[in-house]
Length: 247
Image (tube, rainbow, N blue to C red; front, side, top):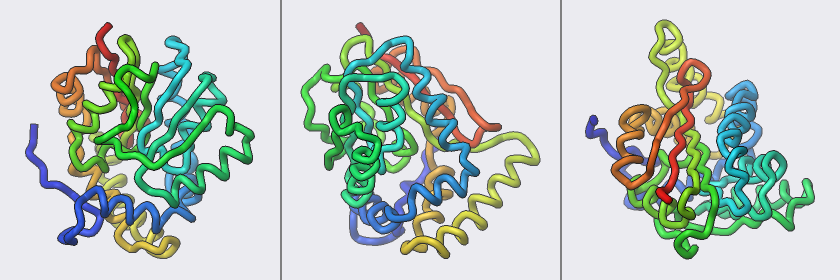
């Protein structure tokens, strides 16, 4: 496994990666959902639906959505599965505020609650949730293995984690087109439409540094998850990782 450098939104800034990520997402929150739809051509909605499909057979009653952002996954889970309770946690309060508006609009307040929370120090008791989800969040963890261990702790025995995260295409010439888009075009669009010129440059850098594919499978196993698997989507633009907690 490659030892890749830690990538942070603002480079050499004095704050920790966690603090920088919180600051970055609070800045881009007002246009976050719009940019996701536009920059992915809407495919991100299908990615989330595909990821949640891994939870159908388990019929989870209580779910935790880590790095919930504006609650896209929490809302989709409440409609698709549907659980009796979904708790979404995130460190960026501006994102959560937007998520609460969306939840209220869809009349899902009785099912979904959002709260400020740190993936590496979850407030919940051991074995609280039937399923844990993370969409495009684990690469932002300051300490990946600590975050994964915390999510394992709050899972019930037999519970499943589903992680959706960007990965790196390998097929020529799509790999080269993808890298050009993510490295040059996407940051330019983000710079023109958001209040943070670094946010979408960080996106490319963090994807390049993330231990995707087999490397991430190994980390899941090392952390204590059972039966980790990976499904690559859309020519490898992103991947779904699933694993379970031992009975």
